[in-house]
Length: 299
Image 1: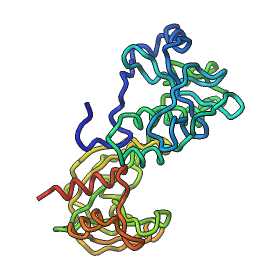
Image 2: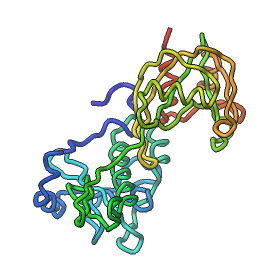
Image 3: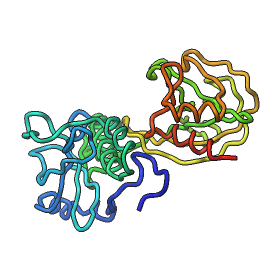
Image 4: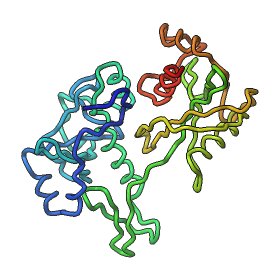
């Protein structure tokens, strides 16, 4: 059962079976089992049954080579993620799609845990691609524990999958919220401000620093709202709502193209009409949209 207003890429649908990750013999047995299923990834895209990206194409065998990521099990069936290239397999009858397309189309239909499953496979595979060599001695390292560790056979250093925490915040001044747009956004799109956390920061400190740097707005009280895994390539979006202490905007033009205060009537009207090239809101699958919905529900 999924929670109301669950985020796309959240609500992982499998039992991750962490206790099996140290049992290499059992994982090898499962990877060779006819009952196991494999998700194929190529260049960050995943193989799907349909062009809309609503149904994954589960393959009944592992590719000839490459890393296998043990994702977990459901109803006694094991699931793995693996990277393939065009020359390895016959992919007829399937479509390689990017996860943004899948998330966009899934968000228009009933909520599903499938995007979370696909995202986890992509994130761990991306991590392996970026960490093939030991940062300590420079030699090539190896995968282990079902794909959740890389270890150097020379200096014995161990590495684990990493995530990059990002704060994304809805800042409130009286009856208005602060939205901004970056130059790389689609035409007219305004969204919540966001930025990577720095070492040694609390979530609250990161929210205040990022908002002040980007918009000149000082923030007081901060509340955590919800989080969302974001597989581009491996981020955790930490959603928050904060109270502004001033309302004069002074944007950092290196970070933002524009920013402004918008009231609830403006937001509701755009949600109803879809907006235009001058003002649109984030897509349904983005946590920024969830933060807007959260704010609209407040008295």
